[in-house]
Image 1 (cartoon, rainbow, N blue to C red):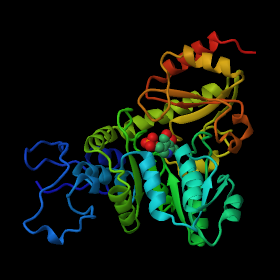
Image 2 (image 1 turned 90 degrees about the vertical axis):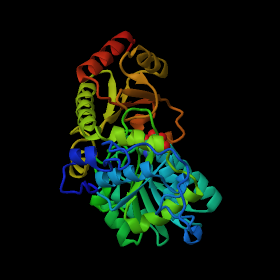
Image 3 (image 1 turned 90 degrees about the horizontal axis):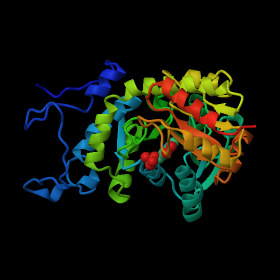
Image 4 (image 1 turned 180 degrees about the vertical axis):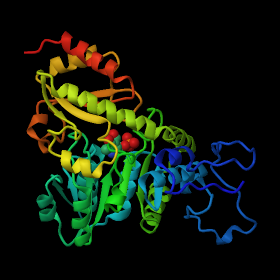
Length: 397
Ligand code: PLP
């Protein structure tokens, strides 16, 4: 049988199952194996080899076969020409920023981004390498317009943003960036490519943590940068060969396996988050719920435009209670686990208190402590029953 390719004529679920997989030529196995070897055999005369290249199997830090299979699948999910898969979401963010930016460049980025993106741009690149940064509320297009400068190389947004779930308009910001000669990168971790494909909306790069929804089982780390092949070649070289952020073959294989059921799981994450957001919104003891699927959410109309299938599996909410009571509430939960991360099969909750280092950037309702809640794929009736029994045990005003 010839090599099988699964292009965009196939549906998302079919590509999730088949893309990147093929019959193993040596054994006839219908799943490709994990290749753990660090090195690959050289030709008779190796002197012409470009030792820095990722184009041929050479050394695992340059890129390995399991990574390449996964890259094919993620590029297909993101609707992008090419993709680089790295060791973590942060390896993807740092690979992108370090490869693109140089001293004197300016970056505009969203006031709600994953904390490592904030530190990479605003502390490391700004302090050590004199990359100029402006942090703004990217839900406000006029603010983005006012922030760009002639030397703005990159606009980086996260939508929905971590942890306030704020929605930024990808299409409008892409146009604004390109009119100024700048690039747009979008952290797509919270939405996932099942719900939102930034490249199709005009972004230059879609960056994400594969650790979350795409792997989905909470047992492997990975990250990806999707975009055009031409722009990714240099980023691949820097992020893997020089920065060393290469993914392990085993993790690439695990994520490949998790990704097969990604669209099925994502449907359940979307549905559970929507149901729980509506449930929480109607509780007297809840001070606010941030979820773009709710009609009451400020970003709802834009989210409806740019998120195709659903509004994602993460929401944030507040309780009308102090820090002690909030911690006590979490301690009573039996199905929902108190842990960081998101997009796992199980529901995860984290209480973010008043001393979060970026508190000053969040809207007022987030200032008194809040919960970031990643809905798993359990029966939603059990999740709601768990929340109800935990609320019943705490003393609320
Ligand atoms: N981007 C977002 C939005 C995240 O929430 C996270 C982690 O929580 C990351 C990137 C980093 O991903 P990783 O933990 O795989 O490095």
